[in-house]
Length: 331
Image (cartoon, rainbow, N blue to C red; front, side, top):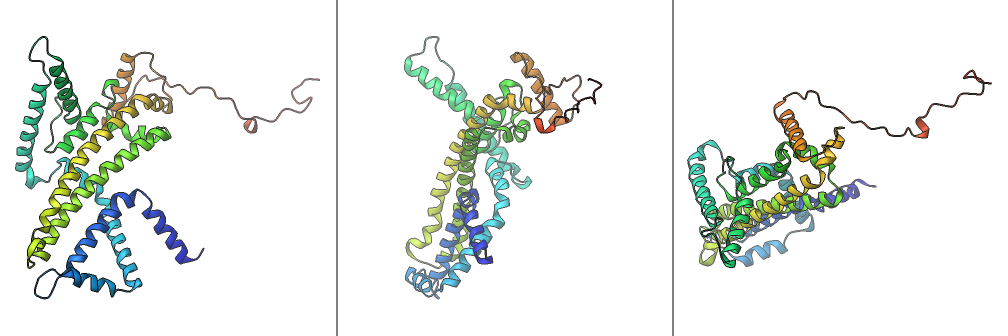
C-alpha cells in the first residue's frame, strides 16, 4: 500500500472512532464558526457573510484539505485534556476558585436537603399522589447526590458521578473507584458496549458544553465591531452550552447505572480471575471485598487468604510422551 493510501486509511479509522465523536466533530464545528467570522470581518469591523462566502469559493482543494488536517491536529492536541475537562465540570476547581466552590457546595446542599424533605412522608397514611411524589424525590436524591458522609462537590455533574461511584458495588463491600480498573477488562461484550456508549455520551456532552462556551467567548473580540444581531451572537452559545451540560448530567446518571450493573453481574468474575474462592454467602463476600479494597487502595497486606487454582486437564500437546515398551520396567 502506498504512503498516501496508508495515510488516508489511518485518517479514516481515526475519524470513525470514539475520537471523532468526542474530539474531532465539536472542535471542527467550533473552528469552522470562528473561521467564518474571521473571513466575514470587513475592514471597517462589520460582519459580512457574503465576504466569507466569496473567500471560501476562492480556496483551492489543497487549501481546504490543509485546513481540515489543521482542525484534526488541533483536536488531537486537545484530546488528552478530555479527562481534566470533565473534572473541571465536576467541580474539581483550582485553588483560586475555592471561595466560589464553597458557595456552589452550599447551593448543592440546599438542593439535596430539599429533595430529602420531599422524600419523607408528611403523614402516616400518604395518598397515592404523595407516594408518587416521595418515590420520585427519593429516586432523584439517590441518583443526584452521594450518601452521607461523602462530601458534596460544587456542581450537579460532580455529585451525580460521585453518587454513582459511592453506590456501585457498595452493597457488596467493593469501592467502585478502586475496583473499576480491574473489573472493566472482565466485562462481557454486551455490557462493555453499554458502558462504553454511556461514557461516550458523557464525554461528548462535556466537550460540547465547554466547546460552545469557549467558542462564544473567543468570538467576542471578532464581533465587537459588528452591528445588528452579530454582536449578540456570542450569547447565543450560552443556550447550547447549558443544554449540553444538562445532557452531561443525564448521561452521568446512565453511566452510573451501567457501573452498578457491572458490579451486579461481574464482580465474581474478578474473584475468579484472582484465583480466589467464591464466597458462600453475602457477609463473607462483603468482608472479602473490603479486604481487597484496603489492599488495593492502601496496601494493607492480605493474610491467610486461600487461593483456588482449579485443576484443568492437560492438553494432549503438553502431555509427556508415552514410554516405549519395556522402558517402565514392564514386559
